[in-house]
Length: 374
Image 1: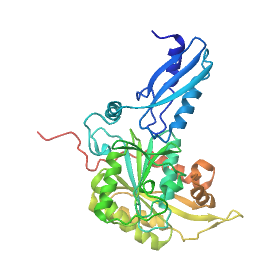
Image 2 (image 1 turned 60 degrees about the horizontal axis):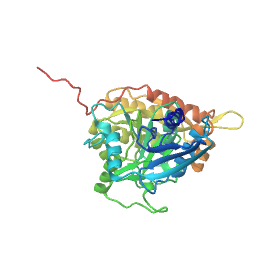
Image 3 (image 1 turned 90 degrees about the horizontal axis):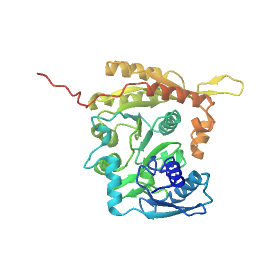
Image 4 (image 1 turned 180 degrees about the horizontal axis):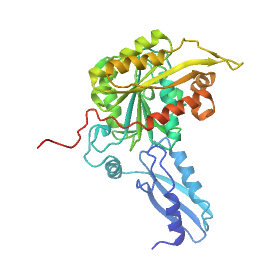
């Protein structure tokens, strides 16, 4: 038998989300028991996925905050316990589906748009663009994830202010969440600022593990921050995610556009679709309101035109992002500019690009259409 008070507590606990899985703890089987004595002293026992869960304090405070205002509750005691192996297995089966293996974004029923953000050379702001696009999309209500595939030059955790390491539930990895975006990076698995010196096969395996072992859940958009150029990781992404679409980032400088063309043209060999070109650092707004074209002009349009000719289909210039101090400061502080200063010109440009991408149809490359000739 349950009392109205216990029913009210269970209802309130349904509003508490696991910080990593982003689903109600009641739905995940994390509420072991709820008890209240005659004086209204409440005891809630919550099951953690693992004993060393880094979010235990967050879960405790969220549970307390959700139930302490219920009429009749005089005190709250949150007790943390740990799931048994059978309970963890049941949770994994619930999240992924019993017996399902492989890359979920390649499943027939997946509606996730996958964008691989590429550049011909380093230093064009590709990672900053990736992070801000992801945060803009998440702020609009989409479920978004980032894979920092730039194994040698990983920077996404720093740009998003993430210091938390991923939680492991047996072989399943739960990615940290910042600004509503789920993020995984090799930088979360190395100590300090140690370099990663891996050859091609190890890079491929690391990316494959991110795609199979990391639980992103049901995403609307997945962004991959690729290393510059047309090397091993870019090839692996095309092989592992044949439905992914390329976004090519360049600066207005003609030399940068020349190099970026090779990164975009690689889609001809891999069978990927190029969703568009993003021109970063397009101009600098001076204090008197005039603009200075520090890196020249026209590189984005030139690149979009060349890729349209190469791909024999329209490759649009999705937008031009001005060179802004706030954009750099946000990256250094781990607070993306679209979140810190949404009225900034660079934020508005990034929001417009994110909106354009959200309205693009999902790529069908490498996918079965479910029809066959008679």
